[in-house]
Length: 332
View (cartoon, one colour):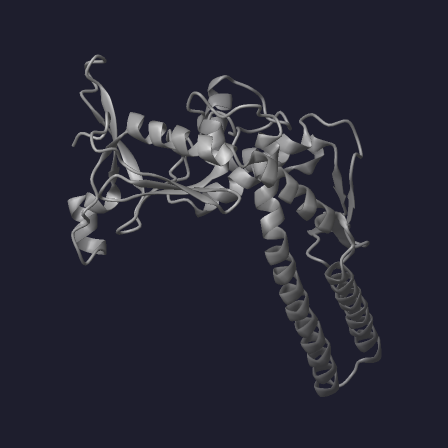
């Protein structure tokens, strides 16, 4: 999934073809099973307790915990199967593929090449595929396709195709320039990491609101049981229930707002963390194209009709590769 770019469906298909039994020894591998494995924190040695709870002790019916009872996250609960950095990169890749137009990660440039004019993705097209000697791969804007252009766009996209080797050449040059800022990027990450690890005022506010919500849910449930025992009048019952629901909804809105602010504050830390995971292990810039590094360190790349390419890196900075007067790989 992470290194080869396989989708969950493709992984399941390969496991089934190889007759690998499922975890339960029953049924076949399916996309949802692979996704659950990829998301499971137990593989990195942690444990999330009370994912489910017993709704009724009479029926022993289990229900998914959506905040009805507290959950507890335990780090380093048991020996890990994979390291935490790899697990974190998997979660990032899962989110990335959710938002991409294509679910597959096997595209050499991970579906991150975009047209500067119409915003569509550049997709690969193979020419002379039957003869390896003459085989070439070009990336063409999807907005150039006649059917797509007629139905979706109000203008004819002026984008031109680019050869695979040209994009690689541009990326390596821009990565070299970005790598020169390695020390500054790592220093900034250390600053952000200290802020991230400190118990902020915002965290305390969220914890307080969450506790208030939990107390209200308990009071709500106790009232429901009391109303049943006393055969309370429907009007009185509904009035009280509406008040509880209104208060809980208000707290939900407040918690969501605080979490949104927290997410916004953490976004820079997350971007720099990805950069740190790679840069800390690299002593020199790339000499050859690495699809794995491209997929994680490049947010997007925009190609102009002049074949200039702007690479936006994960830390938010950008590097531009200007097409040479006589490019080696840009021939139409």
